Image (cartoon, rainbow, N blue to C red; front, side, top):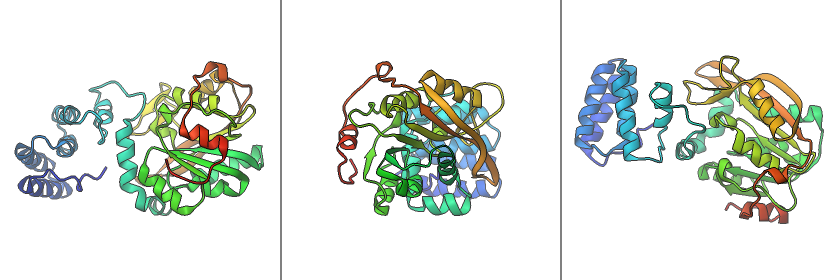
Length: 330
């Protein structure tokens, strides 16, 4: 996350921080970290500054100093909008989290929403929505009665599916991303919510749920898969992508601060919630620092109703989806 927009509230501390950033860019990592520490002497409650100091110390090879800085971030702001917990996990100073801090994901995408489509599609060769749509078409051509797009973002998946769906709903953690999606006029309903905290839908359930490039932010897929199993119509389709890794362990937190999952783990999780796997395809979904990101494109069918195995609940999204209300953001 770019932190230059986060001011300490102290002009002198901000100037020293800016000079530290210039030193870091010039390759003088030790001097950058030292100057950043001086800035924090003037603004000790500046959480964004402590996160930046951790990154500078990491660049300088000072692991212990970086860990100390990131722990200070968490003491100052336990919601962790900067992802310090993930940095601690990558440094081996904390257990890997089951999922990313919601405040971090929300802040990240709120910041990039305005430039998201251009950055992702044109600069990073983003292909997840088109690959997922093609995989769906290969097993079920549609049309679909209703679709729920998890982590809909600015609506890239929704744009590709609109002609194949009578009613299209989307949910995302970032309010700014939802505003971008709303401006496109693609969705019938948009909702601001955390996938891991949503109650299952009741009433008329969607016959398609998608999640394009969403589960890289979830180490533990259990809550999301349980929600889909409890919200999808019996026999409905679940199409999604996951970043893939073939190494040890079911889940791997990458240096990019994204999660990758093994194929075996994903298939076992789907089976546990009553899904029949229709297709699993390996593909490159985008670039990251110039390198291709390997992913799995997965299509599964809910083989039987699993409502008894999930908690049911009422929510505005469930009520609106059942009633097919006009487009709105809640």
